[in-house]
Length: 467
Image (tube, rainbow, N blue to C red):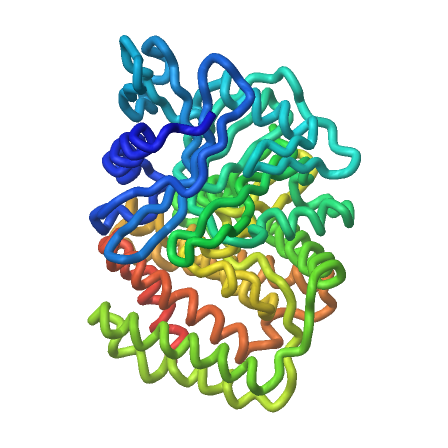
């Protein structure tokens, strides 16, 4: 039974104070004006009671739906105290229910796995299983603690359930792309096992909408984060300051080349299994206009960027003036070293959501694969120079080694990509420069807002790109 109207309002008021304290909540920079329940689906479990909620958060007139499953216990649960939401009184209760984030409650999350295996329909929720997938029924769940915009649970050591917290109507690109790559048997992703859809009331129109809630995929048990591997290589180089990048035992170039080849393989399968088209003059003009608008907005915000703006704009002018079509397809959209992992069997690409801050319609627009290449090239630059900023400021010899490491691995990645794609991304110098510039402009705004001490990393890149 859904929560009664007065109780539902109490839950909404409780969540208005709790949501801004969660790391996955995207609106921390603005006050919460109100919360409204957009759907309430009780799950089939007696103790604890579990309500799957989609709530609409009002911030300055903007309405954003979030997924917030809650578990209601008759007695306090010490093991869940770190995700306590509050206390809830219902009519006739002699004592309150103790309310917790259900994604951290093993009893509650077991129901999700059971419903997936049954391909159940539970009121507003629909559960799907990929053909031939085997689910780890009976395995307990644990929430991963990495910082992210979603919540990920691992069942045993077999499957990972990624629960989308901030919702949008439509199919999440992460599910769509993983479904296509899994059906094509691509070895470069964690296979999709199943997914959950749901429906809720749109807060702006009052009409029902539906969208993706979660995806279950194989857990990569032996995986090591690409950023961690790359920065370990950089640290080894800095410890041997008199050696070149290719002379150090932790040289990363071989892995960078294999990562480039894996990226090209994934792009090829995406082009074969998902929509693709040629980007003509109209599409390229819109692409250049968007890049120019982001540059203008960034220059208005970040004074240090303004001296480079005119030179950077020439990269976008070149895109707008291209007199030939450019192959367009679905791409990763936010590719960097933190979005890839190395397993004992090779590299795997993760998180095909695109940039979460962009509307869903923008994240599925056809684009050049060079956007992903540029993102990874910028990530190599960051891996080299982040340790320079934190550990070796004002050391010219280490600074030279940082640039040398970055260029060596950027070149290796492109060579690996070319070994599969039969064309080196660097041959598309005009487009690649534009995409790199667009990414570095984004980085400049991010660092200006969040890590001013790192601002020099993207600014150094923009100085090079503006020349």
